Length: 228
Ligand SMILES: *Cc1c(COP(=O)(O)O)cnc(C)c1O
Image (tube, rainbow, N blue to C red; front, side, top):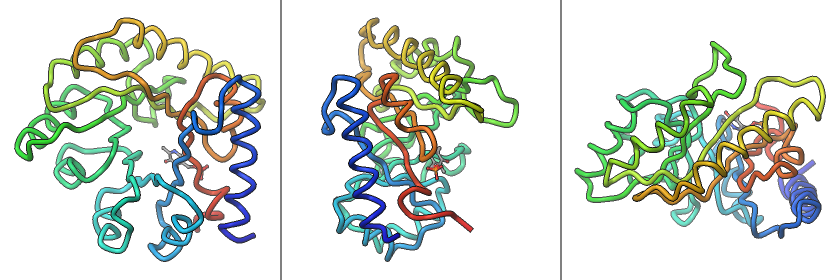
């Protein structure tokens, strides 16, 4: 299947899932996850209408940037170390993997130096898995409040990768939980935040995520094929 065919199929499924949850296709942002995908194929996706891409490695993204359309919005979705923050601030639309105050402080420092405001999401470790990054669900509101104290960082929502699930109903329980936390934080209307993004759902589970309120899905394999 070509990238164009894959995208057409994904688009139809996102539109149908959005409709089932009482929303429109435009209410959901599709991020085409392009880690380990060469720039020519990313450009091919952009030519088919992709507006947002997600990358997991700061150096890989930096290397690809000169070959990517400038108007393509880049999102950083990988695990992030403080020493890589400088490669991302001011260059990406969102940093979706903020899971510590220390990281937020470094983003503040770099954004202030550039005179920009960097949009971030707080990554939540829904299954409390030791191998995965992200804050515990119960700590997410506190981290958002701490980020709100940084003038050059805009907390815009939450991101999560749920544990491997055997069934759709199990995955939906995780997504439902994250949606509840998201709504609670949004309803607090914390100053200097703009909580509007709930980034959940990947190739295998994006329809379940949309059913539970996701408005940003991150899809790699189903668009570009398997990463070898
Ligand atoms: C790789 C990755 C994705 C995309 O996963 P697929 O299963 O290929 O769709 C989404 N989110 C994050 C954080 C990832 O690392």
